[in-house]
Length: 571
Image (cartoon, rainbow, N blue to C red; front, side):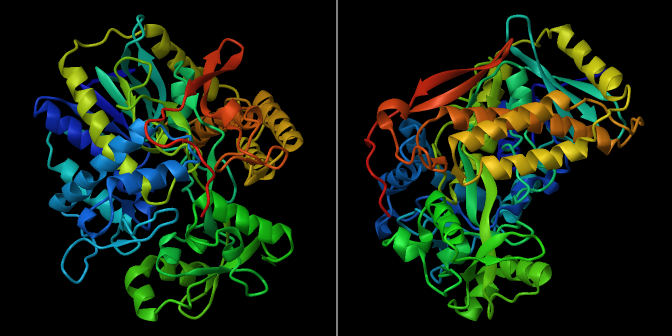
């Protein structure tokens, strides 16, 4: 196994990973070696797909405030967010917007030349900064270009990270990765590391994620003994294009779009009289599914998906052309629909995971020397439900924080002394098991069945009996799944990568299902028809899942409350 020495290794090249790499390189100086290990090429990371906005308080003199952004976020989280982390988040957010501008980010402008902002769901002020509806692409381009200006940042593309390595005393010692191009295993020996691999990704068949988005980082951390937190909370974005699942950004409603049922009614007036179509995502998604379940939806005969309509014809055509350029292009190419004149078929789509690797307010895991940032981490600022436009901001804020923390740690510690058993186990797992006998079970069939199970049993509405059945199905799939590939070649063996991904998907799906069944209340995106009320007396706490010899055990953490006591969410 080749050894590649670096000071800080960043796993993942999305918004959080690139921002972390830049900050580590800046804080550590030119002699600090930063390695970015990424399964794709950086500009193919799923962050490029972010569309609508990045939230920050820019104009307090015009009515916005840190307190307002904090309150919106805490209320949106159904009061499960840690309020100390939320306060840090809202205060650091404007700095990242300005920093991106200094690096060349082409923010949209108001007539007075200042950065433009628009409304997003659950936000009481138009604080989502944007660049048409291609925010992720422009932010990624800006960060990647900035990374290339640092000679001490080196990218290792098309490497699939497979294991976290640590010393006998538990300190982080690097990661093992499979080089897809050569077929070799590589050990990135590092003094500090940052996991920025994104969330659990494409566990559902109708999802807004790219197919390369899978829970590799979460599974890798869990196998290394690091707990996962709040895994039951899966966000379904209200508007996925039927039947592809491609995201129709919330900015479409921020610019004035309206949701309508089969009767032509603007039904959100019934569910959120004040905020209507711009209520938080959990509320809008449940409202859409209620309309569908009560017979006021449409049905796509080819896919079988039921849906409602997103009506953008009420928006001035010039605004759609200028501010929703990509959305119009997507609708034209994928459905032959021009949203200027026709409504868009949409339904809730798996989009984001509030849960992730348990970290403290600085993004540090329980393993000394290892941090996590972005959707892979659970700080937790999102609690039970994330507000739109907060996620890209979170990637930037904790990318910077973890990059600086990791650099300082690396500068104050000697080279690690890894536990060789981990390296030997990975060589055996990859070369002897995966590239050994061919499996009797088709991994692609297992993946399809897993996604079907998640959609059927762990969707917008959940119920005890259904979740118990779903968990039994997942565990049966796990027990029958065999690590192995038909393709025995080493170079560009995408079959091997896919099997590693399915293994991670099975492991993390079981944890999501177990946590959802364990939380016997409804809160945010976790809605149980058999327990429809929020239960603060029993469940105002985070659920942690810790690895044990038998599988996993539940643990808990209190929610950090500093300013706002839980109350009823009314929109």
